[in-house]
Structures are given as C-alpha cells and as structure tokens.
Image 1 (cartoon, rainbow, N blue to C red):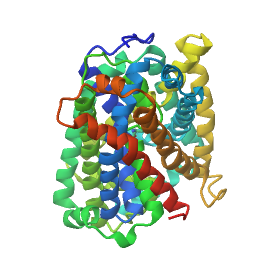
Image 2: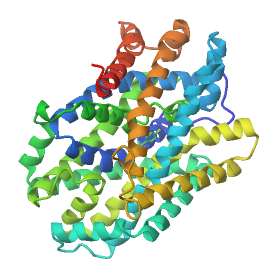
Image 3: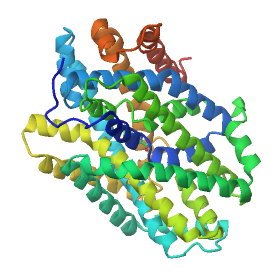
Length: 450
Ligand code: PFF
C-alpha cells in the first residue's frame, strides 16, 4: 500500500530516527529508570528490563512501525482499516483507543514531572545548590513539591509548550532535537566522569549490575516489563503514528535498532551517574520519584562550573521530555483532525486542556492529597502503575498478535524488507508467540495464578 499520510511525511530516515529517539529518550530514562531501579533492588531488575527490551521491545517496535506505515493514519484509524483489509473484526480499532487513552493519562503526569525539571533549571542557575549537602538538597526538594501552586504553574507552562509544538507540526522540534539529543548524551558522559571521581563508583556499579534475585518480586518483574514499554514509547501507538509518516523505502529493522540502542545507553548512563552519588552521600536508592532531584544537585553544587553544567543539564532534560510529550498526544490529535474535521490547532486546545486538568490530580497527590490512596497508591502512583504496567503491555500484546496473526504474512514480510537468513522468520516467531506469551506470564504471575 503506497498511501501517503494526510499529516505529511518525514523528510528523511534520519528525521524519523531523531523523532522516534526523541520520543523514546525522555524522563523515562533519566528520571524514572534510576528511581525504579533503586526501589526494586538494582541489578536483577536491570537484567529483567534488558531482557524485556530485547525479546519484547524490539519485535513489537518493528510491528508498530509496520502497522503505522501500512495504515498511514492515526492509530485508531490504522487499526480499523488494516483489520478490515485482513477481514478481521473492527473491534481491533479498540487497540488504538487504548493507546490514545494511555497517552493522554501518561502525559497528564509526565507534564507535572517535566515541570519539576523546568523549575530546577531556574534553581540550579541561581546557585541555590552551591556547596549544598545531601540533607540541604533534600529539604529544598521536599519544600518544592509541597507547594501546589508552584507545581501547577510549571505544569501549565510545560503543557503550553507541548501543545504549541504539536499545533505547528513537528518540523521545528525535529530541528531542535537534532542538536539537543547529542548534547544531552555528552553532558551525561561528563556527569559519569564526576561520579567516577567523586562518587562511590564501585558501589554504584555493583548496585546496578550485581544480580541478587532475592530482591526481585513478581511486581518488580511487572515494573521492569512495563518500563521496557514505557521507555521506548511502545504499546500506545506513538511509534505507530510516527511510522505513519515514514517514507516507504526506509528499513524498519535497522532504524529500530538505532532507536533502542540510543535509549538503553542513555538510561544506563543515567544510572551510572545517579547511584554513585547516592552512595557517596549516604542517600537512599529507594527515595522514589524525587531521586534525581535529590542527587544531581549535589554533583552540580560541588563541581567546577556546576551551576553552568547543571543549568545546561536540566535544560536538556526539559527538551528530552518535550520531544517525548508531543508523541504522547499525537495519536489523539491526529485522530481528532481525521475524524472530527477540526483544525490541528483546535484539536490541540481540546486535548491539551483535558490533559492539563487530569494533571492537577498529580500535582495535588504530592501535597494536599498525599494521604488519599486507592489500593495503597496515590493518584500519581496509580496513574503510573495503570498506564505503564498494565495499559502499555496490554496494547503491546494486541499489536504483536495483530501483526503476527492477523495481517498477511506477505504484507509484513514486504514491509519489513529484511535480508534473507531467517531474520523475518525470527521476528515473526517473536511477535506471534514469544512477546505475547512473555507479557501474559508476567501478568499471571502478579495476580498469583502462576
Ligand atoms: N519514552 C518516554 C520516556 O522514556 O520518557 C515516555 C513515553 C513517550 C512513553 C511516548 C510512551 C510514549 F508513547
């Protein structure tokens, strides 16, 4: 099918790689990966996460791009049309809906955390952390999140920035990301240098890579799997919708590998920065969502030109979050434009307002509503659990099953264009059997069936 998307097309293979890497690399790598690794005991958790990336993440990412490029529309309409073409039930479009809802819920809290990163740009730049101790940095963070007005202001600003880019299309961000992502990488390397010289590097490394399976509960495995989906933006149609704008001659497999390797490297580097600082300063690896905000400022407070590098780091983190957030809402916006016949601008205003509103719940869950819990989780924890650990893997299995069982072998084989030598057969085996089975086993294990 050589349809062209009504929303346009990437100008080159590299534009797609940058946009998809921009979507993948974000708060998930630098903020979430270190803190959930800290909460789940380290090495064994990291290993499960890496296995999930290889066995589930890579094949499903390829499947999402295949489907996106064949449908060339928003994920909801792509799923509907491909199902129709394959003679399958039109209910397959529900997978697109699941993704739209997941993206919308994720963005609602993602924006609040990106707001923290913006606030920290100003704080680090002002020299607030110069010479600060672990306790001092912690107090500043605790005071900050107990002020709902501040959190709300930053959340609102981040939502406006996101919707501005989505409203104008992705060209501008494409250009910015081209230069910002490599800078982020270089800065992370610089921080690894700091951690090696000033942090408890050996202890940090052994925490991240020593395999102690006794610390791994069923729920940790679910979190590792959920994070594999979250970090490479899978299971909700973000990569599918980017795939819809991918020129037909670009190789899906090699592009997928570039994206996944870049994403994994950034996460591992972030861990290598954070944990040595945690151990050198007597902090707790299981400090939760505040972890990077309580560790990195210590590094910046003590290194030469720390205020400068610190400011730069948080600016880059905001950009990384920004290029991810636009992909979280693009499936919804593209659907509104296609089906409600409204302009991109209007679609953005509606989608943005709704997301902002749900985000208020997350803002309050760190202060006024921090004692309000359901199933032992605050509003933020619940949203995070539900989206990353349940909705994304569920969306992922459906996408794998659809690509492996429903669309014709000939069409996926042509679309992937893999060289001979069993590569295509290996991919098909993974999406047909291994990825869905792995997700189901992890789910069953958590509910206690296994
Ligand atoms: N991959 C992003 C991150 O790691 O921060 C988050 C994300 C973006 C998740 C887009 C899902 C998505 F569709």
